[in-house]
Length: 427
Ligand SMILES: Cc1cc2nc3c(=O)[nH]c(=O)nc-3n(C[C@H](O)[C@H](O)[C@H](O)COP(=O)(O)OP(=O)(O)OC[C@H]3O[C@@H](n4cnc5c(N)ncnc54)[C@H](O)[C@@H]3O)c2cc1C
Image (cartoon, rainbow, N blue to C red; front, top):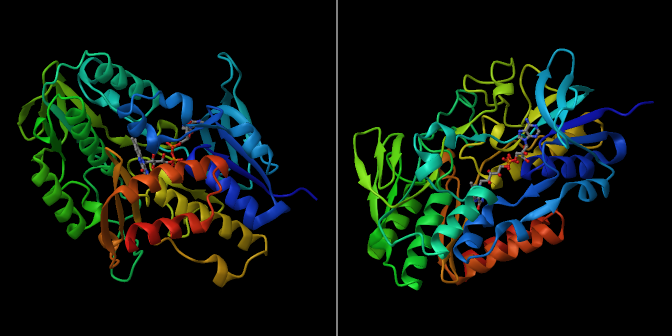
């Protein structure tokens, strides 16, 4: 008898993680296929650290998907997914190794959507000419060259985010008693905090200034609000004692010029470098589907299933419930999906499988100079934990976590997080 076919769209953190968790819990009771337009995992969180240390991130931050998946008997297709037919249980894709391939169709019994989001730099006027970022190798290396080849002259720097247009797909969910998935003004503000701290350290180390040259901006009431008010208060106190400038309630980014950035609230700030994070936008092929919310993010319950099509799951940045857009929350979702499919296969009990998502903002960022920050918080969603630590241990944990991820080929053991929690919080 044919085994049920699980098709997973996307092979980065949430796609690879879902594939591995489904294989772990559902064992060989299912066939699994992963489709991604590229054939490697891009280890995004360490790009900023590489850029400021003048290392080429492309040399250190990839994991080849094909052998990693083959090891667990998981098929891989390098293809660009162009459509989903939720009623006929098929996905359309174009093989992407070479241009010109014909569209193919693939049938699924279960579908896991893990295609992340479009980082919409193209919505920011002037970004192509005057913007910088650290979200991939191309942009990371472009900024690295500006910093290290002398083209950056030491002028003011702005680090901030465009406004996030969150959909309505997670409205009404209650991850903690009395809690919710609130609406966020920015998609992911750990990276701007990390970049602001690191760039200030870089300025000092290179004799080009200090934190007073850097303005941190946020479209919302406060930066990184998802980390909880207490944590943000501590972060802002630390930032202001270092001399950073801070602008909140800017609204969206309207325009960049060679020496300035303009915001929706009318403010215009002088800036030689504009290191920015854009709106996280759903992919076009997800918009308007009966499984998508009003912005194109995939609607799920807290067991990561679409309520109308329970054979469809979503994980990571493309899921409506993933707010903020953090890999660490996607990681929690992969575990849930693995257990749900095992439940359907009769391999786990309802009690073992039905452990609903309780999102935790778990973020370890670089601060430059061998120091880092560590945040573990669920207060924004209605939980009661808010922890911030700064110092050498978080930096070591960030670097060690990458090594652990790469050496275990994405299968970081559960003790990885527990050790991180213990070291960061008890020392
Ligand atoms: C600079 C920076 C630093 C960050 N640091 C952290 C951090 O320290 N901790 C943390 O938890 N999070 C961090 N994040 C957020 C984290 O990177 C994302 O939350 C995470 O990458 C989401 O994983 P994902 O698999 O859902 O999506 P992605 O990583 O975006 O992967 C989506 C995958 O789908 C594929 N894909 C997309 N469309 C298609 C298509 N049509 N057909 C085929 N394949 C497709 C892509 O090729 C890609 O491989 C950071 C983000 C940035 C930008």
